[in-house]
Image 1 (cartoon, rainbow, N blue to C red):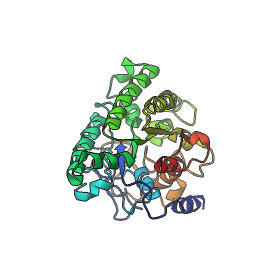
Image 2: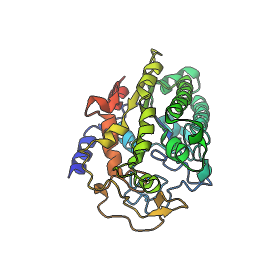
Image 3: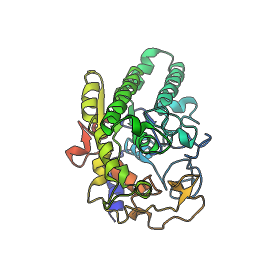
Image 4: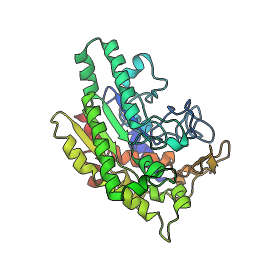
Length: 348
């Protein structure tokens, strides 16, 4: 019942007319809607039971249904979901492009043990190529700059820099940096990437923090909890990174024509009253695609999917995406977002 209430409250926010002319998406698997489908990687989700609740079935989204980017697009009033960079063409790019790639991160090497991916740096290069295409369509710099300044941009990276790098046995990163040093190195590189995005014309940018990955079923299975509900040392390291977001946003907003915001997905996810009955078990049977984190192809998933927080071993269900995204778009308490939420960002 709570899920239906959330869905109805979200749908009432959408008036059918887009609140912004375009929406660009950067990030990893929580936002990927097909960019990894043709890549040589095990980080793919273009097979059943992924997409069991999505129109048309599996698309490459790492969920049973809509992902975070889809829900934001709906809330902003778009009629269609933003196309992946891999297939975006023609005039469609004027309304936005999704560059997100499963297993990618802030650091170029993050996720490479799973195969080919599109890192944040490469996503920025892809965006640069799209801007060139927009410029050719619109015909002059002023029109392109005006359009890009009105768009919403969301960025969600950092998850894999922890579970697909720092805490992975495939990398030496953990022996090179303490958690404090690693958080500082990550935020420094991320800051440069966001300044590049600003230089490419972005002015309304929403940054997702890293969720509590130490509570994900796959991370618990791999690292153990030592009696706690979650893997505490993973969550503590992530919080060191997330703690740097508000100072980062304040620094970036020194540009008077820019507004960056922080979306506190960690705290939203950890809210005790989320309404999920099952928070420590994946809905699908995991072990597929040569990784213990993804669904085994063609297995039948759980039937009561709105009761589950996690779809596979690390990715949320559509119901969890609706919950986190709804509070990122329209903050329920002041600590959900900083300094404003996506809804108010769109109005600027």
